[in-house]
Length: 380
Image (cartoon, rainbow, N blue to C red):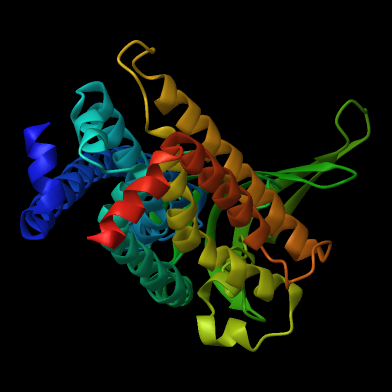
């Protein structure tokens, strides 16, 4: 009580002590955020590595671009993990402060949740600006670079996606192909087996050897000295023929690359675009940064807890709130692409919903003491 009385009548001491408390809160939030971010990033990198290897095995990506593509895709992952890590960092550090009675002491000397918000605001602004830079500029450039590298590799690499001694699917699930031996320099394959699915039949092809060639910007394998068996599964009408040459189309990578178009365009191009999908992509790029703001206020609203309550109850509620927000943003983005929501509303309604809830909850938790505390500080 004596310390609180001194703070009341000593503006300088009050300012110094409040600055110490603010730095303490920011330090705890940063430490917890970095730990959560490191754990989540390591987990996601393992998942990305597996999916990238799978893409190489299917022929979507050349092997030499493994680590380059992994690095570029990690940027998109950071756009998801940083808001989540910051949210969990603030929520966990403040909850721990309440359980250790540190936050209770802060409230005793006149600090409200509103004051805690002000103390953490510089950190929030930094993360907000960081997410704007990543999602609006760095991530599109990474997607563009990935597209360019994949296109260049597609033009240079031979028999991309084919591996010796392994059955592999074609991109469009038209069938499987098996080659016993590959000579990349000569672009030659030996002892080939291919099973090709059509709407009305299945073709089974075997050949002694084959070569790759290109026609009308489409890659093919010309097979020589083999047999072709055509028929409908379950039927008895099968035809077998021997051929001197038979051509099989290799998967078209252009369709895989085309999916990156709206992601690889610059933010400036999206601003002046009239295409619905591209304008929806702009709102999607803004979502990580504004999610940081909404999630921060949600963390402040959910952090207050008691040692008598279950230890992780507010963390569970916080994760449910995060999942609810992500679902709303995903649904809103899909509706924007379909033109069912006006672009003026965008995804702002999602953030507004969480802002309003957090505001009224913080106001309720602070109670009438918030306005009284503010009045005393204004009088001083």
